[in-house]
Image: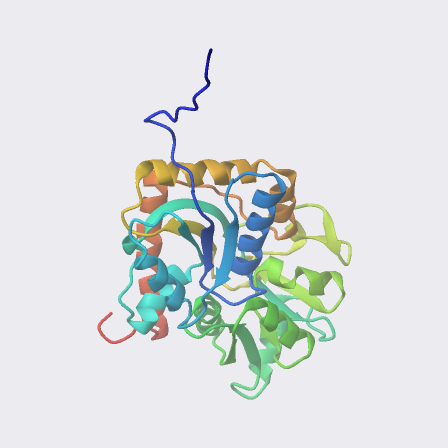
Length: 322
């Protein structure tokens, strides 16, 4: 008589034992939300986790609601958060008791570009055309739409105002999807949306990209619209706007996450990155595909925190005490 007994080795790698809550500290339809839901879909499609990955939007307080929720989730490996650069800007602008060091860095999934967009009905073909129109219009009469107040979009807007010597009126919205819709409807005159947040409207002939806020053109050569590819969009620097800004798309866990728990998610995201679905998503949204973990990621975060503090101080966006 024999019996088979399933034995779990003492050093078995950690994995989730219940559904994992995937917090998005931003509204639905924006870049972070789209990335989180794409990740969720890929994980489900390829059975990369035994437990469900559940996306939850917590956009209150410019994402502060989501950050504080995960900060309070010490020793809870079943809660992760996707971050934008509001990881830095929200605590600096609001003074909420949060810092990226309160969380456990897992991985930089990619960096997101920013593009200066206008309505395709407008005559502007270049960033210079747009800036000439802003300079010719009454001060503050040209509206720039963006996601949130004192966040990435408004930081870039202030940098643009300073670089070009112009004055814009900034109109905040809840998410990048809404921002694109407002530009299509001519409720604002321009935006600095991420590629993924406006690509559908570019394909549909409703919006026109003028320049990208990066040191080099984007890599992707396949035509998107108007017989143009992402790589055909000139840098804003080449158009006389000396502004460079890329946004983090990263994942963090709560405090006191154990190394084997972090390793599980790093391995999960590496598997996601190998799928054709993810590669197509990176291509369609024209992402900078830099991937970073461990000490390299922590050093990058420390540098970016200092840079954002300088940018926000220059813009007058720091909360008292920061």
